[in-house]
Amino acid sequence: MDCNRVFVSKVKRLTIVFTLLIAFLSIKIDTFAQVDSAVVPVDSVVAGSAEAVSGEHGPAKHGEEKFEPTKLIMEHIADSHMWHLWGHTSLPLPVILYTANGLEVFSSGNFHHGEHDYNGKYNNYRLEEDHVKVVGADGKVDEEASKSVLDFSITKNVAAMFVAIFVILVIFISVAASYRKRVGKAPKGLQSFMEPIIVFVRDDIAKPNIGHKYAKFMPYLLTTFFFILFNNLFGLIPIFPGGANVTGNIALTFVMALGTLIIVNINGNKYYWKHIFKPDVPFWLYPIMIPVELIGIISKPFALMVRLFANITAGHIIVLSLISLIFIFETLAIAPVSVAFVLFMDVLELLVAFLQAFIFTLLTALFIGMAVEEHH
Amino acid sequence: MELVTPSIGLVFWTSIAFILLLLLLRKFAWKPILGAIHEREQSIDEALNKAELAKQEMARLTSQNQDLMQQARAERDEILKEAKTLKDGILNEAKKQAQVEGAKLIEKAKIEIENQKKAALAEVKDQVSSLSLEIAERVLRTQLDDKAKQETLVANLLKDVELN
Image (cartoon, rainbow over all chains, first blue to last red; front, side):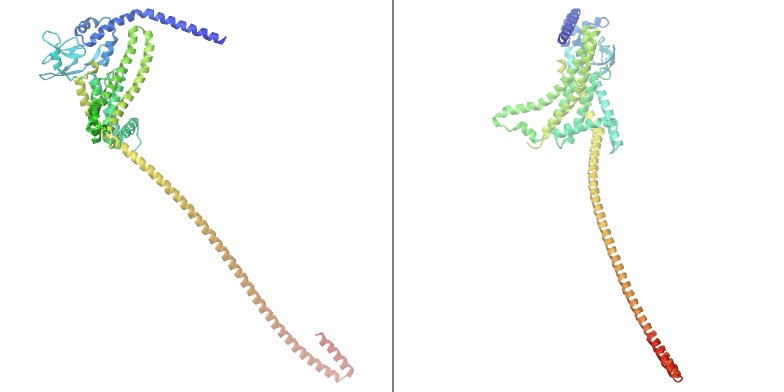
């Protein structure tokens, strides 16, 4: 009797869910069709089809824009010459170009969101795909000339990085001041919040991996840890002054990994180099071993670079995709689901922010430890 | 592909910014912070060691105190015992002496009494002899008057003498 009732209720529930699903799919089937057609041109846009974009820009501006999630996500992941604040308002950032004739500095506001060209001292410039390109005499983008112009602009990522650096400096210099003020006393306030993290980096990252020579590397490890951590955290803030994908940019992770590469190899002792050039294997294996070891020098920081970049970028892409779901389905009904998933992802990203900073620092410490190890 | 191509501008600014950050933090943050933490850890270690030492010292002092107390107690008992024996000795001595003294006095008194008795007896004997002489004189006088009366008198006198 009891079992029967449970069975009936389950069947009922299943029927309801199935009906809702069918209804949902039948209503939104045209949206899917739209999205599918929209994705195709986006891919070609990302690949760099110049005409398609310049043609699209004018009419798309004020009318009902066709929603293209790939474009939106890629725009958010990539660097930009403007810092988007709200609506159509953006903070123009300085453009600094190194040309064969000299430096060019002007505000990216001159491009009016890519609608106008800017007549610089030496060339005319056009903002295309958020890249500054040189415009030739014929009014078209001169790709050859564009390649010779080096872009040292303060982009969104650079500006966001500066903000993070400023915050780090303010926090840690004030923490240091409170150490000086409260000599020999228990930590207080911000100081007591930061101290466990610093001690964690020292006792759980540096000491076990590097050994007794850890003190020399502490500034680098701590700076790396907090630099990555703060940039990760700022990246999680969706609005100004966050919102930039700083640690999810390959250039930044490249520099960080390069730093590790340099630190490791400068401090490598004779055992480290012996391990690479005279490993303890039969000599006929040297032609294999030495190239492998040499590749190992590069591949270790390379893994660091890709790991940080991929983790942070992936997190951003997932969050943006979930948000995009609302606009793909063009209904508010999906919003609670999206928001719930985004909330979950954001919490996960918070963990990842700490985790990636920790892993990067830990592996750096590990590589340093391998390079400065005394005996074999 | 653009996503994985590092742009020169960002590489440049990141390098500069990171190196600057590293130098600034090393000078103004990490050195004082790590130094202070290290110093505090050392001072805590030191304090703990000192506390441990103090505890040991305390324990040592306590045991020493106890020893001293015990010693003092034993000494006190000893002194008390000594005092008691001394007192007993003195008491006994005094008693003995008093006895001896008393005995001596009694002896003296006895001798005195004996002497007095002897003197008294000698006096009595003198008086008796003088009395006897007087009686004899009287008897002799009465004898001269009446024979019979003399005899009774003598007899009476003799009776008296015997009473003595």
